[in-house]
Length: 420
Image (cartoon, rainbow, N blue to C red):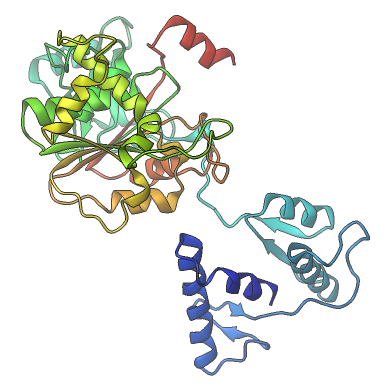
């Protein structure tokens, strides 16, 4: 009943909490209308029993935990059920970390309801290595294709399975320097060469193998969803923007590049920002402007410190680049655009679903982020939207994922990422 009271407080909110509260209330009311007795328990289609319970008046909690708090009253009910049913396993399910700690301290089994958490070390990284005979490496270079044999599958690490669009280092088992790089094509059931632009992309050339893999995925029109995970300075955002500009400005495959990122401050917020929406967004979107100005410099375009941001503004005036907040994306349909979602580690799984479902016909979405740079207090490195997306889409043939390992921003940046 305490939960019903708390849900009632949110029912008029126009936020996600309000929407979920109204949905929950309607669901419970449908159970009531179906002729069930909520106090005795209503059987659900999956065999579970739904019941609205009341806080037990008995003082089962220790003196340190007062019954005035809603959380403690819910905990008191769980503890009462455990004492009344000693032979049954009572499981207390809550998202509240401190409440789980309290429950465990009182001997009540507590669990989180998010079973899809993936520890950072266990996240699919999109790259694997196969050791094989040297003649197969030569055959790959000649035939531009290498069928995946049973022996090669057996040499794969882990379960021996390979995902669609997984990137592969092919190594000569007798000569480790004799190598090749490819991508697994599910349609051909073979490893195919990656695309290496001779002139780079907007003056940017790959500095390591993972960046080469990322460029192949970013420029492949058949791959509609690309996720790039990596620590600070690995080139995630720069590569994504460079590929988007190449596909939009140079090749005309997409009508424009749409770049967005969640608005979360690092440390204490400085408060109200004056001006219209564009002026308010400038501080949040400055990293995007910096990357585009860097690309203009890399391609020999005239830029100066006094005219910083002019290159980006020109593209925006022509309608080729749009930089927007994620706040107003619900309900939109975004066709034929190269969409980049930066800092996606600050998004929840529900938010990432809302964003990906905005994609219209011929739209490509690139999602970038670092699970160790999270500013959103409601997600962590194991349950953020980026990790959730990587794990859910790793078996799909229209998606690709690469974890970038080596920082290329500067030697200082690389040391800071590794040591601090």
